[in-house]
Image 1 (spheres, rainbow, N blue to C red):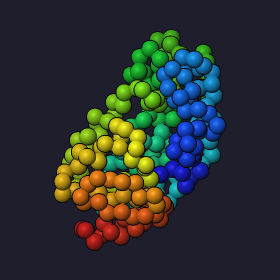
Image 2 (cartoon, rainbow, N blue to C red; image 1 turned 90 degrees about the vertical axis):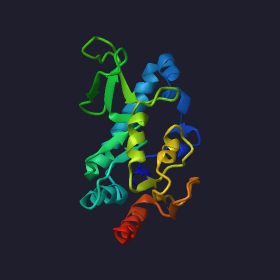
Image 3 (tube, one colour; image 1 turned 30 degrees about the vertical axis):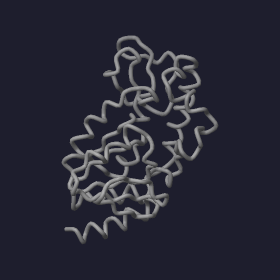
Length: 217
């Protein structure tokens, strides 16, 4: 979804992200081995986030709120959906602009600026870490997402490989008759019967989606 804004994805980098091994910067073991490396990695991602803007796909999804009750469930950790105007966004894998306590995961703060340093602590005195769900950690928001999918009249999947679990399994909570639109030029396989493929990138595909939804109304 955010690739067209200039943000790279894990699958683009074949297991590397900006020349970093994913296990070194996106796992609890990596954090324990070298927290300075992890902090630097996310500081650079956060700094980059301040330099990019939402693309037409983000704005198109936000615009759908004029006609539909839209909930965005995203694997992305950026805030581009919010900046485009989407009012109801659930982040499965955390949020880049937020940090949390290493002692109490319920102590979450919005970072002022892009840099988090060793020695930056929560109100209880423990080191702050990126508010990101790393590999091997639980995905609490997944359970918030399930009833949203179960009760959805329309489901739209945009720009995901459908190979990262548990997020990829969410579509299987859809009701059997619910139409599922998949926007991606790579056409990821979705094993449901009511799938409509739009083989375009997000900026183009969301506009095509809008036209198709107008026919459903």
